[in-house]
Amino acid sequence: MNTTVGIVSKIVDNILMPVITVVFALTVLLFIWGVAGLILNKDDAGDKRHEAQNHILWGVVGMAIMLSSYGIIRFVASTLGVQSPF
Image 1 (spheres, rainbow, N blue to C red):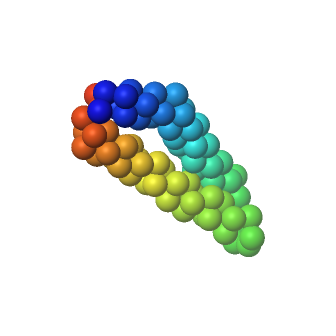
Image 2 (cartoon, rainbow, N blue to C red):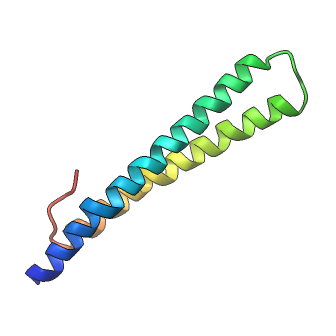
């Protein structure tokens, strides 16, 4: 059991958490990019404004997925008896 806990702990700490952090940062940047595009194209009712709205939408969806992945990791870690990685 201790070997399994150690392996799971190392996988979570060294692989999953950095990947999730980077992807979360990218979704935040996508959201900010969409907000900036929406502000800069406030007078344009065409494709640029629609594209900015899509960036905002997918940025929010991505952030929600990344936040739920934190919860899933925490649930699995507590189920296996691994100390919470955060």
